[in-house]
Length: 111
Length: 349
Image (cartoon, rainbow over all chains, first blue to last red):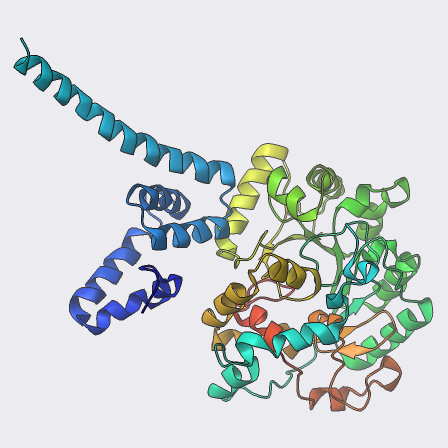
């Protein structure tokens, strides 16, 4: 029996999802490729955003992929860690801002 | 840090490097050997095209001990080409019809016969006369300060290593102070006209990744290097060559020590590009070592894989036999065929 849920080798097999639904799989990868093309944002900036989001959604595959991608693009550790902190700040801010809802509800119900 | 040779590391012996390539993941079938992979597309054995580049390694002595160096060069390496062998190189270069002379090392400038070689070679009038400089040597000692002028006088095409346009990554790979010295050297080269538009003096930079990953897109990196070096230091250059680190000598040591070897080889195999095979540098290059022995490339030189012909030395140079030889390959060759390919002139596909 497999001992872990994650196998790093699965990342290389990502394209195989097309085997069970070719049409949707192809549409996804076409969309994905298009998103990361150079546009108003550079592909370097997009790589940093992808790295930050990878952390926010805690996707081990994505962290693996976009750390390597960042290195290939010449991103340095300061840039990459700042991006991770942006993700962490938004994640924790999203938690904390709900505290306002809690406070209001608390006050409303309390005498 | 000392060279593998000085440390008597087992990987200093090319036989042990080749044994590694022929064991483990390549022996148990996890990954195909380079021979098997090229056979799939009928590209084995690799055969040379016309000889264009005569690449001469004038010795392994260097003022730096870079962590990724496939030559295992350093101040403790004493292998130095003599003027007799240099003369033989020039004689055979003329005979070969090659249009490019490419001097490398180590730091070629540290060979005491280097200036004589450049002066004599420039008289031959090859189309492209390259000297590969690590930059820091140009500022290492006053006796080298005039080299930019010397290069200019002999119309040398300077190809220089600069791993990154920021201090951190450069110094981590090449040693403390390397970035500042490299910037100083680039400014000196610019000052005499190298890399300056309209001067006719070519200054190219070589980028190689600072770790166990492939280089990014060469054009994108060139754009970033040009923008950053211009804005931060007012430095200009012509082209940037993105070169893949090959798993040879000290880079191989790094891969093994950090347990990156299997993943890196997997990445190289995964990125195998049959189109790149058609343009790999061993197809148009002959590599000569400090003693005058001949190899398919500088990597094969470091693995002591001499050309597969009866004449393995300059003294027995036979252009026809060389043209008909089979190029010797092993698993390190995946480094030149990954992605957009890699050569001393950057990407090939």
